[in-house]
Image 1: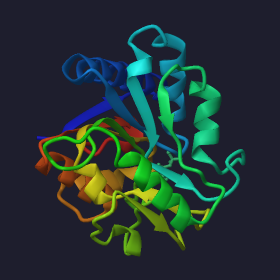
Image 2 (image 1 turned 30 degrees about the horizontal axis):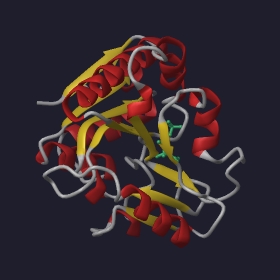
Image 3 (image 1 turned 180 degrees about the vertical axis):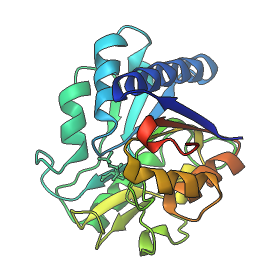
Length: 238
Ligand code: 6PG
């Protein structure tokens, strides 16, 4: 059973994602004493970050939350292409712990350094870090994080973080959490809007093999929950 929530507009979508995120983080803090939130790059989640910053700053013990990046572009950490740079301008004042990749180095060095940091997070019984809330965007080709169809990034890998080169979506060099890292997801929230993304959503729900489909399947087969937050134009049931 897929949880697909359809919204009339991106504002309502952002508000619901923010609410369900903070509810899930509070649940994790109650159960484990801490929580990990994997934040997503791209443009779709930005409105939801704004809702969190404006409405939930006092809603939970943010000092018990660790925010990590699902993926990052290699290049100047204060440049327009940098995912964290965009998000930090919205969420920077949240008193959460932040483990942010150092993008001012090669993808190999950034991935290796980030892996050594991520692997120190609390592990679940699945043998990988517990990721209480995972935000994911997706492209019209079904990519997510920096895992792309018909690309080496989607090959099985024992690592939690990999370097990515020749990304079909610029910039070319990135780092990304892997499918193996996604095994630790407790709640994955996929945000997708616009008619161009509808085919990839339908394909994922129908058991396709794009990265977003593989991630959703891995989360569910490892007893995690997958929720889709889409707008009317991307509604796969239409
Ligand atoms: C990135 C993102 C990428 C993004 C999708 C959707 O670094 O580019 O991680 O996977 O989530 O491309 O991007 P939009 O939300 O801007 O459509």
